[in-house]
Length: 467
Image 1 (cartoon, rainbow, N blue to C red):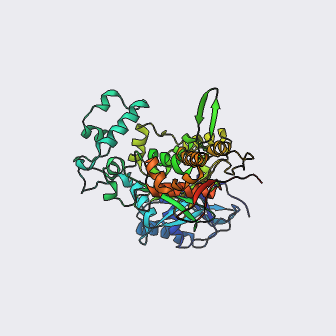
Image 2 (cartoon, rainbow, N blue to C red):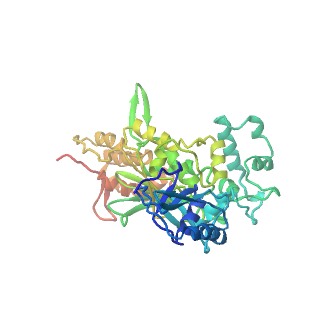
Image 3 (tube, rainbow, N blue to C red):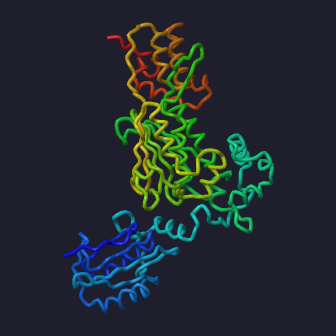
């Protein structure tokens, strides 16, 4: 058998025979990038021939029109006395269904779309995204002027908003950002970005952070960040710095430098991606902080046709929520050219850390990145001051103060140490007792402090690790 030379096309399929099930394939190709299908040709491009080609020349285009509502180009060819059929499928600019079901060709697989993926697909074919939908219940009074001022200040500082734009009426700003329709009604994106209480409209506008020990069952403490999404990354980073990640101390000359254990700009890029690309019809964003790594997960898988490898190469920007992405661009938080993961890779490489791992996971995207070595060397010195100094390099500012308070009370009088309890620390540091309890639990986990004696008469001590 001789081979054919198929036409150059992004997708080419070879089938030895015709079967009506291939209408699903034609549907999937039309919904994707189009294709050329050959019938009567095997996978080795060898012509095996078709029977009843005259009938198929009528049946195939008629069935495609009747079941799919599109027109395909069907051609008959002959080679070495054997006939085969070529079907050319153009990509459709509207969603195509077959028997009420929608199919999409992605990579080498044919997927049936349903649920959220179908909704996103239909919106995309219509040239819209979910955040572009008008929310009929909302009014301009639902927006927070402080959030808008924050956005304008950031955009001005990053050179993407002019001084003139900063002082335009809010209605003009919303119109320029495509956050209202022609009647001035707010779109979903406007509420997510600037609402006083976006949870009133979207229950999943949350960023949950949990600190875990040995397993997912070992949840040590957790926090929930709520509110508008334009300021969410800032709030998350502040919380990570104060409780979840460490900021080792270094000195450059006489200057004290506290730098986050992971590259902050790259971390922010990961957070921006999770916030911008999240499916807000799903559940909240989740961050799991472990001893050696961190996981960030958001609802909504990668764009159709994208793989984790695609993100690491040069690629076009495909935001799930285009109006949100545009606002983040105007604020100077992101670039508009799909360079996010390039910046993440460069940031982690410069910090001597491996590139974060990106994967589709449980209906969403999970990004996993490594932390700096969290093992704390046991100090050799028996001097309380030396212990506290060595420990401080691995703690947040508040945790270092707690260690210092315990150290000072021991140095003054061991009996006074009884007073250094969570109530005392809470009042001293002006934070609630639950926060102190979490800090103390972390210090105990790292074997830096211990409670000695009974619950009523005992006291805190700094652990002397000298063998």
